[in-house]
Image (cartoon, rainbow, N blue to C red):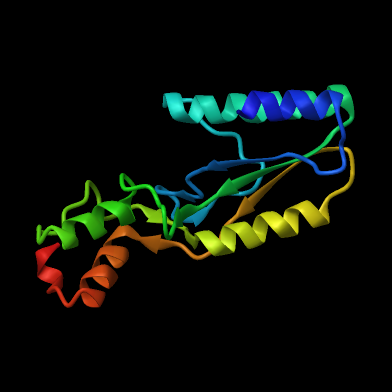
Length: 165
């Protein structure tokens, strides 16, 4: 799908610039600060390498064909239809099944963004950039939440003692 969109944009109507979204880790776990837009990423994992490659492909097409494009690096999106394998999906599933709350690591900090806010952000991006070239934006709330705090909040909402984490 991605390839079809970028190829069509290179030969067709350029009125609506393509937006490529990618979920990135905005919060560096060692420095506990948000990562800057345009940050170069270490290629340690296949999924990160794939995302970096996709961004490079988009930037190459934008340069080669004079396209306008935007790359939106999303925080952790949640809401209806969300990924059941995400940390929020995992927590909700555990609560629904009466299981103890268990996640791999409570220390990471993530930026959580509701799906309706993502859609609104995409609409603003579409309306805001008409210059040829490729821009990269972090589409997020800018608020980091630790997995520990997320798990505690979910427990409080579900009236489960936080010592079950």
